[in-house]
Image 1 (cartoon, each protein chain N blue to C red):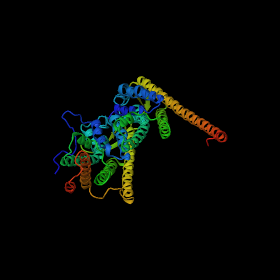
Image 2 (cartoon, rainbow over the protein chains, first blue to last red; image 1 turned 135 degrees about the vertical axis):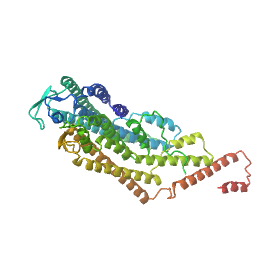
Image 3 (cartoon, chains in turn cyan, orange; image 1 turned 90 degrees about the horizontal axis):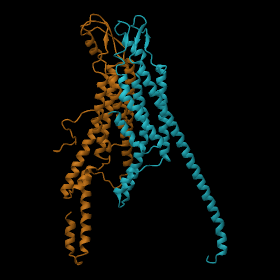
Image 4 (cartoon, each protein chain N blue to C red; image 1 turned 90 degrees about the vertical axis):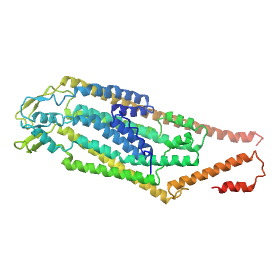
Length: 252
Length: 291
């Protein structure tokens, strides 16, 4: 059970995403999951063991570390990535449910080429209309909500995205104000800014995808109403034409 | 008695026993689950196993080395840690996840048993072609009859195990909060010494998270039980369409017999096209009465 298992589940959804959704997935994988796994975890690896305070009071370091880092950046990002990836699975579940229903219909129809039909169904790409559109829309909203929520949480807990070199700590059992030194603060700041920027990029991509979906839906309904107008127009013309024909044609 | 191993576990020497292989075993049962069961499995794998492996294990990684006591007495550290942390959260969660997933194997065993009986019946009737056997292997059974009971019992066990572990957590770590400071006076500590736990806030956050997801899983399981019971009641109320209340095995045998009769009638009508139409009526009757 690792990030790659999660990613393999997500790529299954890729088929039914828009092109912006596919870009989002690539950004998620390369700029966030991979960076987290391959680089960031090593930077934060010794965050506790190398956190040293200018004191000999036992327990002071532990308590100061806990006071200034209620939840580590790495864990926040892990949770953020897990939560952000999950709404896409709603879409996958709906597609699977839909295909299951169609599969039943195919199996009961008793056609000649059942295996071919089933295979075609397996590789079929459902158009993003109707119910699927709403579920996709809802999953995008959830994604935005989670991204925004976690960015806000990061900002609230740490105040800024900049990690200072030292903090002043006077929590008990530290005797006085003790200087506590954080390990690798510059590297951590660089990675924090990097992750925040990729997070913002993902938010922008999700917003763009949202607007794209809405625009497509509007255009589709506009075209549909146009076609309906044309149909009504044609039908009324046809009705006008028939009584004239009845008069002229002797066959009837 | 059943001589064949009921579960098809390919456990070879050298197969890595980790969460990934665990997940592979569990998801095999997925085929015979309801929709809610599949959602439960996704929640379990993503929000519990994945979070445990990727995040929680690193939080509890230094729980023993980061546990410091305000004393220089050798052994005091160790003894105090042991007194206040009889079993670590991580190990409790691992146990919980393994035990919670085990009832699903009841269902897998039942399905394997049915497939085994199916194969035997087919072989007895003399139509054991490899294609038919292959079809049995991939056949999906409906959740009715004895399989329904097995499934419901497995979900009830799941609920019981989840609640039991939540209770154990509450007993060992009251309030689900991770304390920052513990006061310890067990031998060989000289006095009451202050001992400091590492990363208590982060641990509290993750404990509450895992608790919440546990609660969600319990709700999903209860919903699944209610759904199954509702479906069964609806089935009884509307009357079974053609399915009798006889046990599954007799139904299977009688349907097989009917198939055989149909097959023979079809064969006979085919052959009679090329034979003398003046057939001895006794022969026909003999054939039919064989069943």
